[in-house]
Image 1 (cartoon, helix red, strand yellow):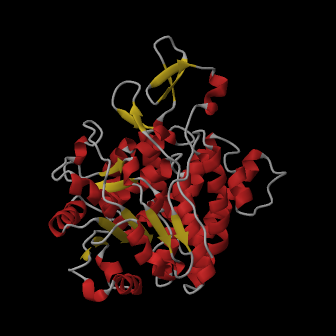
Image 2 (spheres, rainbow, N blue to C red; image 1 turned 30 degrees about the horizontal axis):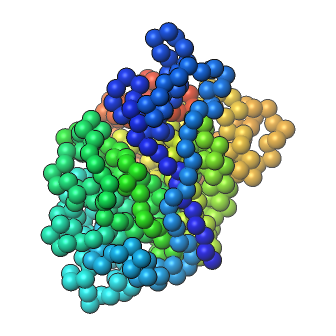
Image 3 (cartoon, rainbow, N blue to C red; image 1 turned 45 degrees about the vertical axis):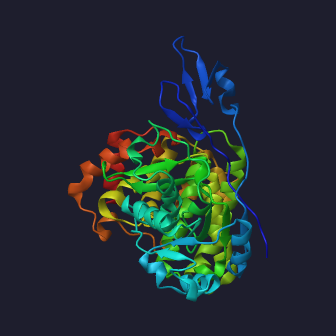
Length: 438
């Protein structure tokens, strides 16, 4: 079965009060006269607030994607087309010991390792700067002309960002936005996910914990986009049930938070809702039977759709999850899963009717319900759904200590995701939410 999907374009644009925004960050601000103003691609113009959701934006799906069982076998012909002759494979130690990696090595030619193709297998579960620097150094020393990133979101993010330092060795990522550089003509990237969660394969950003700040930073640029994505469900069949559930919960969170984000992007909205429908149908099957190729394939597509959808933006759950990974080393998907219900309840109490369409996508009969009832039934369904795949524990069950609360709240407040949440979130709100899930 063949399918092609992609993501929406975003462009870095000048900010309203200086600095740099991406198109997803463009929103209605107020000028000095108090008029509602759109800041997009450096252009400010007064507008009618009642039409605030109809701002100028750009839609496109530029990521070529090959989907289907056995798609990996086509890689050599794609490398020829992309003029990649000496690729660097970027992954982590866990993936390096799997059948998926062995399948890739077989396709590339095992005898050619360290001669025709090279490998960096040291990416951490939550990537740090060294996970970008070291492969970049291999690229330069070995003369690699392309990157093949295989694995979950961490190897994919590291592989994307390594190309930046291969072009500009020693670049300071803390100045990525304050001192923009020319990132055109990066060596091409082929992204091959072996999990169905982050959707990093279709994204144009990398999330890296910076040495200087000890915090996760989003490195965003259109040039980070992969030249080819291979979605081969065979490569995900060895994923253990718990990791299948955690990554699937990540994809579900992407779809729900992007749909409820108030930014205008109806194409993302439709993709998010269909992603939810696919996940609700396929994730329990994939957790129960890892060899269910149909369920694995649907989850791969749904994960990519979730990442397409969150080009629109995310919300409070991700702002809670990011510090849990940075400070506690928690798997990102698990962190999202443990915070999702609390985040949904928080938003529903402040914006009634927010989750009706989400519930309908889940297959619930809530058309005739009041807004409050629809929210309640939807959140109740998500609660039971997560419990059904084993994602109903507390943070303390995973080693999170109460004494970390202040640090978690501080980082959550600084995280940009909640700025596009369906409702505003304060520091005290974050504290209450963490206590609820602790």
